[in-house]
Image 1: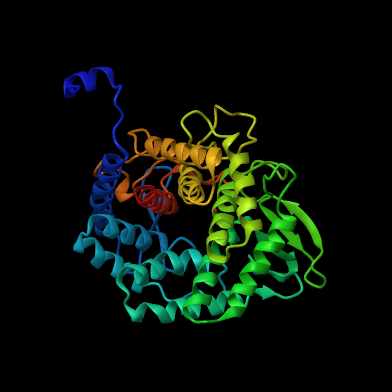
Image 2: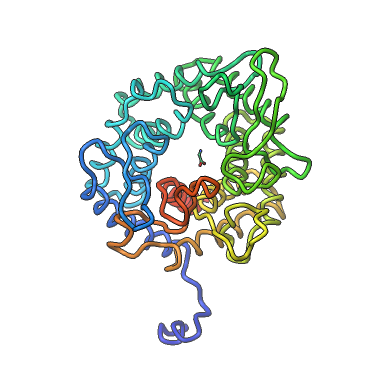
Length: 379
Ligand code: GLY
């Protein structure tokens, strides 16, 4: 057997994935206790500013569900009751009544209350899930056959690829509360998005703007990507995750095929270490930013998709997920204990075109990273 000393010198035996997970979840528990100590009542973590100060949000920000969700995953893995108490506290401070005009109810409520119910079976978490799903359904247009993203009706009926992620709330609530219409709305949205958001090479536009009155497409463009015709990395990640999840929820083969096509497309655009550049078409690659959040979402989706794929695809998806997870768990990306004000991962981007949240920690990177590790361990 190789000695530890030889291992350290040669570096030729890689750390097992179990050991990577143990290390990351121990770090997550330490970091999240620190984060909690940095937050006043009603505050949630959001990011760091350009000076490295903690930026917080209230429970109305689209990301409020990710910190409680990360706490739930950390509790799931470690069994640490202290973390469970924090998860309960942050989950219950999200109220659907505060989210009346929001389209991100899946992120906000499914990542928090959904995980809470999944792990505890506590029935008192269910009313918020039911309320959130019903509220999200009010944004559905039977003419466009999709759920509206941003509100302003004077700017058209705008749908971003990100909204595929909110369909999990509808699908789960449809089963939980025996409400078929939620499933029909989710499938309509997924079908409309499949018809209009994707290019021939399976990259996706960020935003499709529809005409309210007849559902025709007015314009396709970007908001957070490099250009209207580019492939914004997180958008590709939302698409991969969204169609993989919709296959799990519905069993429809066309969703699986879409996920596989997007999965193969993304593989062609990833750098050696697996962590995507923020936009696949930024001409400054490799001298531009990575997006750890996109990488984490991709890793989680690839692990799940490997479970539905066969042969070559399953092998490649598992391998790339492992590569991403190992890179994110390295010192380059993982915050040291006590660093980053209690976030877990560095080097994500919110929106480069807006100069907003560039090369910083983001709560959703932490959330999907932990989810991916749990999924990987359950493979
Ligand atoms: N849903 C917003 C984003 O991905 O930045």
